[in-house]
Image 1 (cartoon, rainbow, N blue to C red):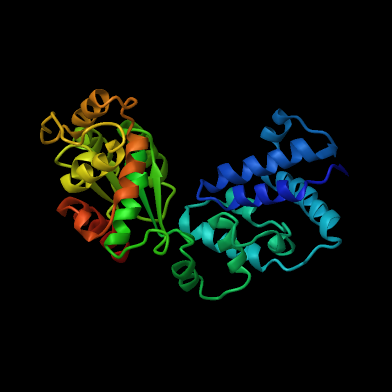
Image 2 (image 1 turned 90 degrees about the vertical axis):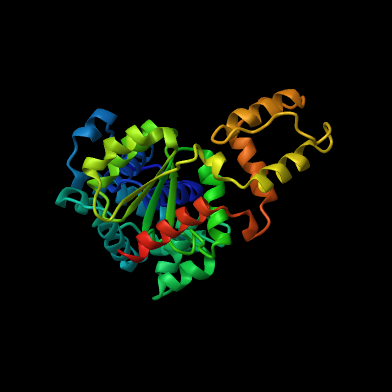
Length: 328
């Protein structure tokens, strides 16, 4: 074989992609094929060739390129495959895998030699990977370092507001998502939540918590026939996630953000369940830019202070997530 070695940065990127919380088959095939396409000079394969290639052959070519690249940087390869075995055990504990996908995991990638490339500034999944080679009590390490991995529960939400604020409110409830292995996924809308749940429920062994706005009741009905007994749906009865925020927190945020723009007395009266509409009017008439949920969630995050900012529904949501994990 004629090989163009991966750089150190490319090796780190490959390992990162292999250890993210993604469908096992999808991520391994993507990484294997990318390594072969870009770094195996001879024999030369097209994308079509790789799509038709048996998994075992893909694995052998990819690991040959990977290990040759590691050796070209470090000077030798390690034959310690303990990390590979731990990754296989983890992936099989999270996903339902057939024998073809298992064959992708039964590789001889020289992860062990690459641990020197990973430090405390690396992304969480890479820090976790390094700890697999150093620690026996990985759960204690996750709690101490807020690593999120190993993942134990998946939370599906509609968008960026929940993604930004739910972990912050959880901390006020003394429940840190990253310390407890809670992996939160913003789907990009209620219809996408349904689509993502359909993709996950049959392959995922972990419990799934689904959070939907009030207008997502029909979407919840679409999920219900497939809902496993380890999963749960929570529908926000008062409206959208912005509606569950305390009025004091919203007012404090607006006061802070508007203090250098205009007076802080509001002419608009907020209607229950229509907070987004109210905020749109405030932003429009205060001479600010267009109201955007993503930016507003960051404003709220900066102004969260203590448990007084929790509302009963937020506390209930966090409690349900906590209980879902503890019951499994």
